[in-house]
Image (cartoon, rainbow, N blue to C red):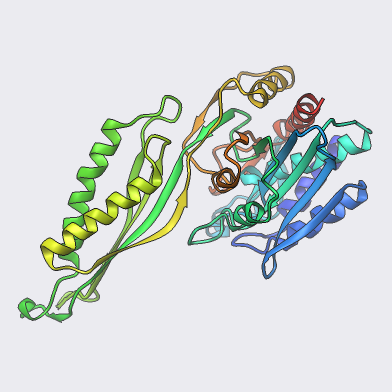
Length: 386
C-alpha cells in the first residue's frame, strides 16, 4: 500500500463513531479489508453489536505466536462544539490527523492491520503465527471493562501467544510494564430523619468518613512500604463521593468511589481483603452498614527488560524512527491485564503511535509517526518470526 492508501484506511476508521461501543462498525471494515488481502479472519460476537475481531497469518507450528492487539472502541467526545474540527471528520492539517480515536487507538489498530496486509501481499514467510486481536469494551464499560479481552482469554485465543504488542498511545516509546488497578465503591446505608431530630435517624455519611480515615492510613502504608523499580509506587485516588438528598434531612445513603493503581508488590487480592477488614471494623465500631462493590480488578503486567520481543522492538525502532525514544513502564492499564490472567508466560509490550492527546479535545495523531509505525510493526513481526 502506498502512504495515501495507508492514510485513507485510518481516515475510514476514524470516521466511524464507536464512542461508547458499536464496535461491529469497525470490525466489519477490518473483515472486509482482510478479505481483500486474502487473510484469514473472523468476527467473534461478545455482546449485541459488539464483536471482537481476529485475523492471522502463518501457522505457529514452531510454537511462536506474536499477537498485535488493539481495541475498537473510543471514549465519548466532549462537547463537539469545543473541537476545532468535528471529532469524527478525520481532518488533516499540518501533518496531523484530528479526530476521536486517532491517538487512542485506531491509529495503532490501523497500523497493525496494514502491517498484516503488507506482509501478506509481499509474500513474506513467517516462521510462526502473527495474529491481530481487535477487542471491544476497553474504553466503554462502566463496570469491569475489557470484556473483549476477557472473552478472547475465555475462548482460548490467548493460550498460545508467546508475545503480544498492545498499540496504546506511547508516542512510539516502548513500555514493557504497566500498573494494574482496582476500582471500587463503598456503599453506606443509614436511616433518614428530619435534621432537627438526628437522634431518630442514622447519618450514612458519618461511618463513610470513618472508613475514609482508616483507608487513608492504609494507603499511606501501602505507598511508603512498597515500590516497583520500573513502575514506582501504587497510586490511590478517591475519585467521587455522594451523600444526602437535601439540606434539612439526615442522609440515609452515601457512597465513595476509589481508583487505585497497583504494582506487582501490592497484590490486588490482598488489598481487597484488607479493605474488607476495614469495613468490618467500621461496621462493628459504628454499628454501620458499609459494603464493598468491586467495579474493576486489573492486574499489573511486567515483562523482562531483556526479553526477546523487547530487544527486537528496540532494534526496529532504532532503525526506523530516526529520533530518541524511551524503554520504560507506564501508569495506565491495557487489555493485557485481562489476557495475562489466562497466559502469564506471555511477554507484553505497549507500543503505539498515539500521544498524550488521547481522551482530550482535538485529539490527533502525527501521520509521519503513524506511517513509520506500520513499518516498525512489520519489522518486529519478521524479526520475531524469522
